[in-house]
Length: 155
Ligand SMILES: [Zn+2]
Image: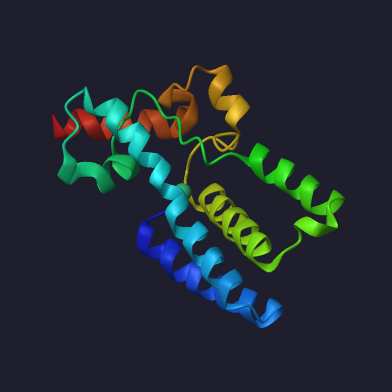
């Protein structure tokens, strides 16, 4: 999902977090997590840059281009599940800031999962690892074909 949409959704969810917890720190961490989790794309960008990816194409690359390898380490439901298990089993972990971070994380991942047209398993680290972080499997067969076709048209 585009950064601007993550910013808008994070503002809304952070406001709800503030309303629920009455904590500015929780709302702020929720917002920051909801937006800056996408910083993990930098690793993918740098890795794929060896294949002529240009800096000005940073934002469009993830939406339109065919990246051979995609890691997006932070975009992993496994982390959310471990985090949730810790929250449920350790009452002392349920601090407003930690809850804000968790909600920001889950919101971001959920929105990416819903609105990006990738494989339904794309946001599972083990799925990406199993396929050697190949972009082809991350995108899923249909989107991969679509991106390849568009890339060929562009030349
Ligand atoms: Zn994302």
